Length: 208
Image (cartoon, rainbow, N blue to C red; front, side):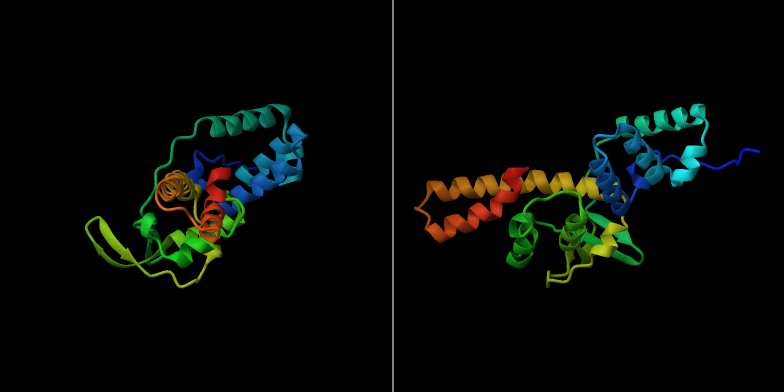
């Protein structure tokens, strides 16, 4: 008698956490030359069924799930920045003005060689989103950055939040770095040390 299992296929990235997303990317990279294995891992991560359960599926069922997973990846929408995110009883606000972000926060973000949606991104989110201390209508103030990073909190948040923040931050940071470098080059000649600092700070965004 064939065992019946319930399979839930997510509708969008609102159902997938950053921790799951990182696991998916890791397995896809590890098996980049094995498309069948990649699909099995996608089904495992997205649908929550084990390797043994996947192997027990009929060919018809497997192909149906495979098609649904492919539709899931093909039909994604653009995610916008969510300035305020409520986690539990706490509201977190995205850095209100990246151009006036504290030097400590900027240094901590740019210390990674690349900015990607990986384990380091959870740390960056902990810097960009901090508890709101004052809010009025659509404006708010957040706690000053003091070096505390809670990556586990953000690893468990859904990808709609991460996608929105990632693309907003990357695009805006790219513009800010480009404007800063252009402005400095048009004024007084930069010292070697200042040029080195700006080049290192902008390296991450230029690589993207």
